[in-house]
Amino acid sequence: QRLQDFSRNASFLMCTLAFDPRSGTKWSKPVAEYLQKVRAMPASSLELPLLDGWFESPEARSELWAGDSCMFWANSLMCDIAQVAEDLKGSKEDAGLCWDTIAAPEHGFSLLGVSLQEGRVAKETHRADEFDEHPEYLTCQDKPLTEELLSAHCPMFGHFPKGFLEVEDWGMPFPEGSRQRTEAMKCHRKLNLPQSTPAAQPGVTHRPWSREGGSVQLMSSPPAGWSPVTFDKTHDVQKAFTESVKEAVMELVPGCSSDDWMCVVKALDKQRRQAEAHRTAA
Image 1: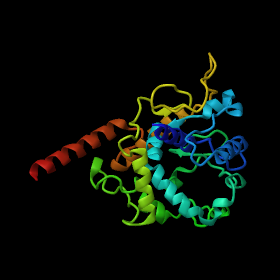
Image 2: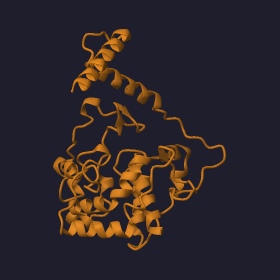
Image 3: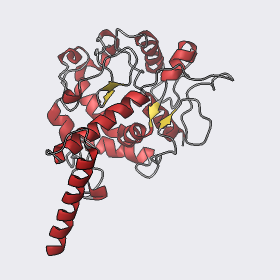
Image 4: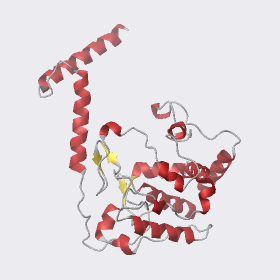
């Protein structure tokens, strides 16, 4: 259970957008110092240092959140990701933290053209699916993470069968008999994965101070009356989502104007009836 709690807490840190030691942001120094504490702990330790000091400021608390879906992914694949990270790092294992010497990218994690990170610009929507090359990362690792490697293993290192949840490709596992596969599966057994992978929680985000069973426990509860410092991009994301849906619909009805929704509704209904007639005829 302690090992599973450790992996749950670690997955929270992996999925917290602001928790990044790369230089150039207000989070760089505090995160780097925290990670140095982690490095200094015994390799056999199943504890992570508490997020205290600077992290307890109202502004920092506000950005300490992680998405449930990301945590499910990170917790499920922690053993596999560790093998990839170890292989990429190679001889740079003894280079210290290192990542605090690399500049953070100017763009933040973006959703539909909206940055979810304060102080970082959004990545253009048309570039959202592009793979970013980072040659500067070779300061801290021997091999680059390539698009081919990422595409081969994503989304789940082949841990689900083809067709599960109507997904045809769950990625490739490590080769049978390889050291990576042996070590990853040994790690899976220790963590009792996938049986013990926490199921999706009622909320879509997690905070690091919940005291409920199976939750993240990395810091003390906020003081009475605390509320997040406003950095609310919900409206922007909703607007971007609406525009995205609108753009997709308009591609289906080229004969209609974007402000003539009666034309759009009639055109879509006509297409629906034609599709039903085709299925009936078949």
